Image 1 (cartoon, one colour):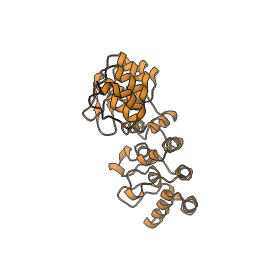
Image 2 (cartoon, rainbow, N blue to C red; image 1 turned 180 degrees about the horizontal axis):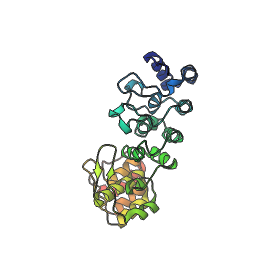
Image 3 (cartoon, one colour; image 1 turned 90 degrees about the vertical axis):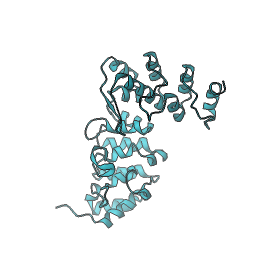
Image 4 (cartoon, rainbow, N blue to C red; image 1 turned 135 degrees about the horizontal axis):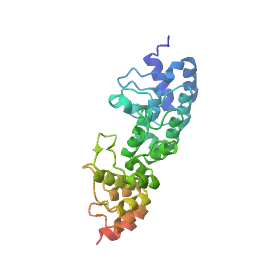
Length: 281
C-alpha cells in the first residue's frame, strides 16, 4: 500500500522545488518516495513536476529558481513523469508537465526552456500522451521558439505543413506540399481545414520562427504574405518583427508586405533601420 502524502508534506516539497532547495528536496524524496508522482490536494492536482513547469498552479508559486534544471533532474530520476495528467486547465491530455512547460513564460524568461524541454523529453515522449504532437503545437501557439527547437531536437514529429514550417524543415515541407493537407489544430481550439488557410498559417508560423527559406517557398507557391488564416492571427510581417528577425522583415517588405499597421519605432534599432523607408513613404 502506497504512502498517503499529506497536504503539509506536499507543500514542503513544493517549497523546496520553487526555492531550489536541493538538500531538502532530496531528503523528502528519499524519506517519501511517492512524492515524485503524488498529486497536490488543491483542485488542480498538480505534481511536483508541474511546479517546475510553473504553469497552471498558484500564481505566487510560479517561480523558476536558477538551479531549476537540477531540481527537475532530481525529480525525474526519482520517478516523476513529464506526461502525467492533472486537472490543470481542465485536465486531459493538455494537463501534463511537458505541455505546461512549453507554454510557460517563467522558464522561458529565465533562459532555461531549451534545457528543461530536452530533459523532460529524455523521460517522456515529445509527442504527448496521445501521440498527436500536442507539445509541439502548444509551443507553436505560444511562440516558444526554444521549446520548438528542443522538441524537434528530441525527435518530435513534424509531419504536418504547419509543424514542418515552424521547425524550418524545408525538405519535409516540399515533400508533403503536394498532398491534401490534414486539418491543423492549435492549442487554443482553432482549426484550419482548407489548403489555403493551412498554407497561410504555415507562412505566418514560418515568419514567427524566422525561417526565411520557408517564407520564400510559400511566397513562390503564391501564398498571400498579408493573409491572416484566422481573425486572431498576426500577419507574417508582425510575427517577424516580434521575433526580431531583421532578414525576414526585410524580405517581407521587399515582397510588398503591408506596413501600414506597424507600430514605429519598434524599439529595436536594427529593425527600425529596415522599416523606416517603408513607413515614411
